[in-house]
Image 1 (cartoon, each protein chain N blue to C red):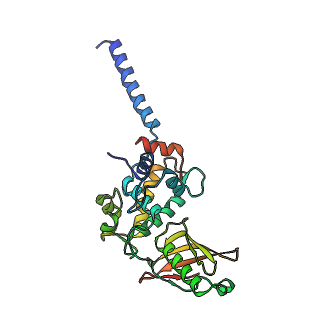
Image 2 (cartoon, each protein chain N blue to C red):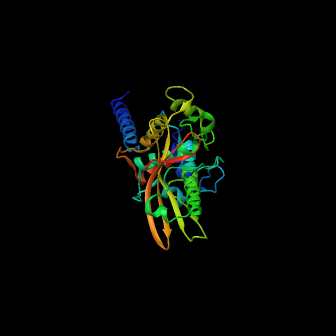
Image 3 (tube, one colour):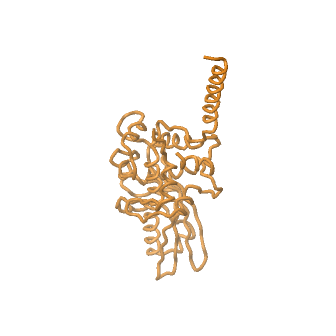
Length: 130
Length: 159
């Protein structure tokens, strides 16, 4: 069973050539890490990560109606409709901010093996190993 | 089966059990996120957050007092127009931590608008907190505010 999650992919992409948003230049590793580690403590905290993800929701929500449709979601690189469906807890075909944050929090918690609320180097390495 | 064979078999089974348990103890891999969005999507989301808007939607207008008080009194109409355009662009399409600058060559006044946080209200409305620095005659004036996006695409200053 595949255990890839957001962090694995992020790190993998960092290790390769950076990641590319729609119509944007490839992001450098420095840009990515500076964004994820907002307080520069060398760890990725839950709050700083979720803040960044709230912002991602805003930018992905093309018509700014406050929810993500499957069409909007599929504009994201690597989007999987099956995961969208699982995250859509009330099965209305849309992802609310709450549903979105619950799903992304699950990803974060899965990586946070010692349950301290932050991802340290060892946890990041573990993600990479998987 | 001799007693020796039975003993060897017992040791082998025990060793296998211990090895299996140790493998479990040494596992530091991530837990499975059953309801998560998955890694590929999260990587794309992070890229979207870092890259800002790529939708081609034009920035709307700014409603309310973007620049008030004594500082506002020192700006002319062209300054205000440029400041409003910069704020609108920053709020609509720029990731938090990045800035949009404006400059009026006629007055010499400049400004920078930087979103710092994005959130959604309970009604689904998007709001963004921002900082704004306006430089008049070499003197910098910084302010902090919050603007919320209206259904028509404009941004209303709420604080």
